[in-house]
Amino acid sequence: MKKTVIVSVFSLFMVPAFAQEVLDQALLDQIKKDKEKSDKNIQDPKASAKAATWMERAKLYENIALQHTAIDSNAANEAKESYKKVIELDVNKKGAPGRSSQEAEKILQGAEGTFLYNAFVTQGAQYFQGKNLKGALDAFTAAQEINTKDTTAALYGGIAAQSLDMQDEAIAGFEKYAANGGVDPSVYYGLSQMYRVKKDFPNAMKALEKGIEKAPDNKDLKAEVVNVLLDSGQEDVAIERLKGLAESDPSNVTNVLNLGILYDNSFSKLGSEIRKIENQLGAGGSKKSAIEKDIEGEKGKAEAFADEIKRLTGRVKAQPKNADLKRQLADAQASVKSSEEALTKLNADLKALEEESKGTDATALQSELAQLKAKQAEAKNNTITYYEKAISVDPNNHDALNNIGIFYYNEAVELKKEVDNMNMTEYSARGKEVEGKVCGRFTKSKPYFEKAVAVNADSDAKNHLENVNMILQQFEGKSIQCVD
View 1 (cartoon, one colour):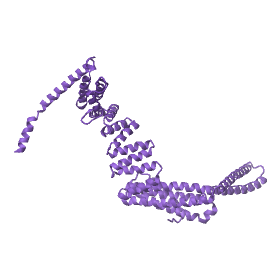
View 2 (spheres, helix red, strand yellow):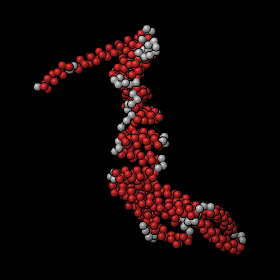
View 3 (tube, one colour):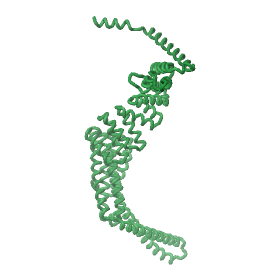
């Protein structure tokens, strides 16, 4: 029974749709008339000198901005300027603000119960929807000036500025959103991205930390912290952060894979530092070995050409009129001269390298070299460990499969350089042994490339696999015993 009474009571207030349309049109017509009257009043010298005229106009345009923006899309701005005019005109003889002036001041300051802020937000939304981004930005900026503690205008003002590629203005808007307690994690992520582009890593990190405070479980924000640390050169800190993420969410293959990549990069960087110190030390360095190998080669060529000169000299004596023999002899003599010049330069390079080595603190460098090699060994173990973990989480993870295959492949290439830089004596002593390790590393890479190709037949892994198969065939032809 009570329900029936409620329904019947509501029915007394319901207006048929066609009747509502009539009322809306009538209201719209009245507002248009009021607007025309107000526009005329401010042109009248007497009326425009009265604060009441401007107060009435301010409230009228505020209402238009809130509910009837089709009448005047700039209504909020007109309302704001009208309130300012009220403050200008409504002062007593002593210059103190009158009642209307005080009311207008409260409205411009966004006091509770006032709606000019809402008028600007509505105007900004209309501009935004109409693709007038500059108008939207101006409206949202004006709204922020009225209500400095708001997040809505700050957020959409930032979005409008970003759409206009006004990065500084966008950052200012998003910072206000954050300062006023905004909680949307995507805003903090975007703010950090803008700071990263500017290479302002401290503020990029602050934005992420604020976002994590608001959304402590957001994985994207935490992952972005790692990216900022990497960009700012804090690789060790990034690794520790990423370890924490991997431990808290072991099923997240991306975090585990990224750890493998970071350690992989560290392994390569340490390798470059190791080679640099080995070159400084000279003895045992790749540069010295290469020079010594070249010297040995040039000596061999010179000896061969010397023997050829002796042979040709005898034949020329026996056949003094043979022009071809004379030409061959001249070529052999020129080749000997070229080898002698090359030997002179190579010996000078070797001497310079040895002199350079004398000026270094070999003991300190050896100590540093040992530390770097220990770090590289640790980086290698961690690289393989995390790539294997990623594969255990996702056996079909192409990147993890391909990356670990490349890791073993590159190890083989580095070992092959060692063989290439050996002289004959060194090769005779341990060349075959090192080549066996080279073959072993290529062999180890093969199954990973095969699995990566099975996951994605069009990836780079296909080329890597073809190269490995070709190299291993060459080792079979040389009867090299592959060892791990």
